[in-house]
Length: 415
Figure (cartoon, rainbow, N blue to C red):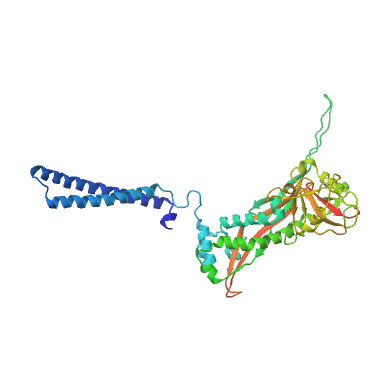
């Protein structure tokens, strides 16, 4: 490591030793200076003027003393000063440096020694290396900003291939009893289990040799910027309508039943009563019915989800007082509102059509779970597309409904 990056005990001891040596030299010079100056003063007492040789000696020692004092001050300040980047800006990790060497030149010796997960998911032997934590966090942030469902769903980081989540189907049996009546043993609560397997998602950006040779280019930012849009596009489609085969299961892929017949494991819907459209008269009433199909505990954090075509048609609706149901965002960066609830635009939602469900409403933070397996991996390929270098980037992600009571659909159908 360079001196700017030294943080270990050996570097600290070396700095202390340099400071002590400089101080010792300074004190020795100072003792020499005192002796020479004392001699000069003695000569002045014995004679009218001092000896020229002694005077030059004192001046020479004094100049050396000044230089050593400046050096000592410099070492003292250097010792007291925190290492560059310690405060307010984290130093790059060792993994990040090894990863950059691999990205720029293909030198994988250091990163291979750091990657200890041999013969496991995403190890070097399986075709890729873990990106640094800094890069993984940046990709995660960008995905949350670009993927509409991920932005409102719960996100869980896991280290295994499958997340298993138990839930209670029914609580213990209870009942009223008289003061002196017998109290028989009640039935135990019933538990079941939801499973969320993680599937592999990949992107393969390409870079030129000149880009990789340019030391000014931040490769972490570049790889994050290249893969986040591709990942977000694939994730967005899977979280809405994925079939669960080699991809997450979208909330529209579960069995849909009329709200009056709803049961756990299904997604309830409210029908518009008109095939492929909203009712011609009082269309806002069906939206109100959809809102109140959701239990009160879920409505507090609920949001509408639809694509822009559906939003365009609903934007024209008014209430009985002539006010538009759709309201623009209150400030830049905020969401539009529909009947007092935020509206999330997801282009992967279906268009309005016969028996389609183009509108969803619910608390997606409680209703839908996104499972990210820790680690994003990159395999450098300089051979397949010369003169370009390909970076095969993969991550594992899963998803599915975790609370079937938290999401409701609006079906454009008769029943």
